[in-house]
Image 1 (cartoon, one colour):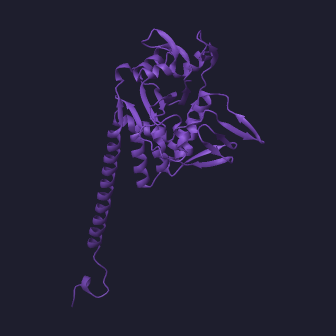
Image 2 (image 1 turned 30 degrees about the horizontal axis):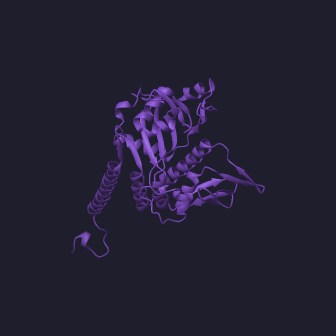
Image 3 (image 1 turned 45 degrees about the vertical axis):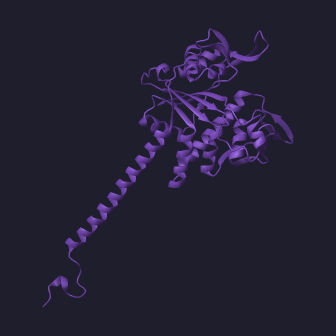
Length: 328
């Protein structure tokens, strides 16, 4: 007669089944290794595309405690299509040139995350000039001068420098399919082109997102009355923080590999970092930003006029030193 394993209806030997499962397991493991290797290569490729700012010589030494990131939001029109929707208010007086729009010091630590908005009109000694001016003048002298001014005139250590191009982030908003912003009331700004007819969570396309972060005459409609935000720089910085939080939260929750790829390319194309940020530092910063919800510390200031009649802000003491102490 036939051996038992060859009889009709007989079960395959146990050894053959084990071999089959081993092949399946090896195949799955090989696929996972290939996926991890590809992901690592892709992340490193994005990292290598980041533009570097050579400021390592003036950055503060790190003592192992919290880390201070000086984040500058710029408003450049380079690379923007002059035929985009609402171009007249998006571009304003022209399509060329760049300017600083936001200066923020972000502190990350095991005790929590803090954010300090620094008004562009803050009047203080500018490093390397021997004179006082708005801190915005320090930016015109380059990142090194801005970093040294924050260190010397505000007494704040700066461990890393990050520059974000808000106009360029149109690509990121496109990659996300829009950015969700919550409005407590209908809002508009005829100067920037912002138009939000209803309260609640609204998904902004790239044009409205840029109008939101650029808004300088932000007006809410409450009970039929128009209320203009009179906080100037501070109000705009707060809206830009809201925008960045929403963008980073949505980017961090993306799972579609094609969406993740578009997000990575958009970020790499519109972000500049200091020359001391290594691959693992950048990876850690990306993880922090994707889930970041920092507490905002207001910098107490007083409005004054200079001898030339310019309206500026100066530190209100001793309250300003108490706020700055959180970042020192």
